[in-house]
Length: 75
Image (cartoon, rainbow, N blue to C red; front, side, top):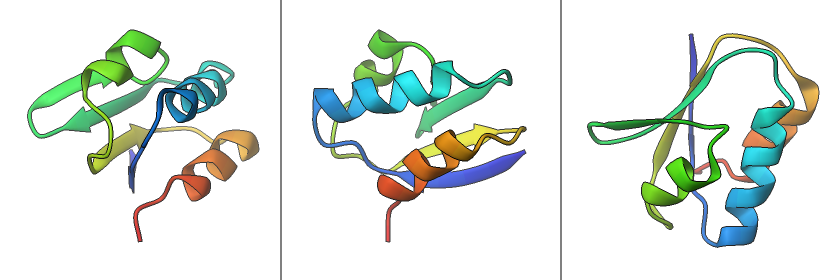
Protein backbone atom coordinates (compact mmCIF):
# COMPACT_ATOMS: atom_id res chain seq x y z
CA UNK A 1 0.00 0.00 0.00
CA UNK A 2 1.13 3.49 -0.86
CA UNK A 3 0.37 6.28 1.61
CA UNK A 4 0.37 10.01 0.93
CA UNK A 5 -0.76 13.06 2.92
CA UNK A 6 -3.21 15.55 1.41
CA UNK A 7 -5.35 18.46 2.53
CA UNK A 8 -8.70 19.50 1.04
CA UNK A 9 -9.93 23.04 1.74
CA UNK A 10 -13.31 23.32 -0.02
CA UNK A 11 -16.18 21.16 -1.24
CA UNK A 12 -15.18 21.67 -4.88
CA UNK A 13 -11.75 20.20 -4.04
CA UNK A 14 -13.46 17.24 -2.37
CA UNK A 15 -15.57 16.75 -5.49
CA UNK A 16 -12.47 16.87 -7.75
CA UNK A 17 -10.63 14.37 -5.51
CA UNK A 18 -13.58 11.94 -5.35
CA UNK A 19 -14.09 12.13 -9.13
CA UNK A 20 -10.44 11.21 -9.73
CA UNK A 21 -10.59 8.41 -7.14
CA UNK A 22 -13.78 7.02 -8.70
CA UNK A 23 -11.99 6.56 -12.02
CA UNK A 24 -9.50 4.13 -10.43
CA UNK A 25 -10.09 0.38 -10.51
CA UNK A 26 -8.45 -0.21 -7.11
CA UNK A 27 -9.47 0.53 -3.52
CA UNK A 28 -8.57 3.91 -2.06
CA UNK A 29 -9.02 4.75 1.62
CA UNK A 30 -8.84 8.12 3.29
CA UNK A 31 -7.98 8.36 6.98
CA UNK A 32 -8.06 11.05 9.64
CA UNK A 33 -6.91 9.90 13.07
CA UNK A 34 -8.94 6.69 13.66
CA UNK A 35 -11.67 7.30 11.07
CA UNK A 36 -11.28 5.58 7.69
CA UNK A 37 -13.60 6.17 4.72
CA UNK A 38 -13.83 5.09 1.09
CA UNK A 39 -12.18 7.85 -0.96
CA UNK A 40 -14.78 7.28 -3.71
CA UNK A 41 -17.58 8.49 -1.41
CA UNK A 42 -18.22 12.23 -1.51
CA UNK A 43 -20.12 12.25 1.79
CA UNK A 44 -17.53 9.97 3.41
CA UNK A 45 -14.65 12.26 2.46
CA UNK A 46 -16.62 15.35 3.48
CA UNK A 47 -17.39 13.76 6.86
CA UNK A 48 -13.67 13.77 7.71
CA UNK A 49 -13.72 17.56 7.60
CA UNK A 50 -11.93 20.21 5.60
CA UNK A 51 -8.45 21.66 6.18
CA UNK A 52 -7.14 18.55 7.93
CA UNK A 53 -4.11 16.45 7.08
CA UNK A 54 -5.59 13.28 5.59
CA UNK A 55 -3.77 10.06 4.74
CA UNK A 56 -4.58 8.46 1.39
CA UNK A 57 -3.86 4.71 1.15
CA UNK A 58 -4.05 2.88 -2.18
CA UNK A 59 -2.52 -0.05 -3.99
CA UNK A 60 -2.62 0.70 -7.70
CA UNK A 61 -1.48 3.12 -10.37
CA UNK A 62 -3.43 5.81 -12.21
CA UNK A 63 -1.74 8.86 -13.72
CA UNK A 64 -4.73 11.17 -13.30
CA UNK A 65 -5.14 10.20 -9.65
CA UNK A 66 -1.42 10.72 -8.99
CA UNK A 67 -1.72 14.20 -10.47
CA UNK A 68 -4.61 15.05 -8.11
CA UNK A 69 -2.59 13.75 -5.15
CA UNK A 70 0.28 16.05 -6.11
CA UNK A 71 -2.13 18.98 -6.39
CA UNK A 72 -3.46 18.50 -2.85
CA UNK A 73 -0.23 17.22 -1.26
CA UNK A 74 0.79 18.51 2.14
CA UNK A 75 4.25 20.09 1.99
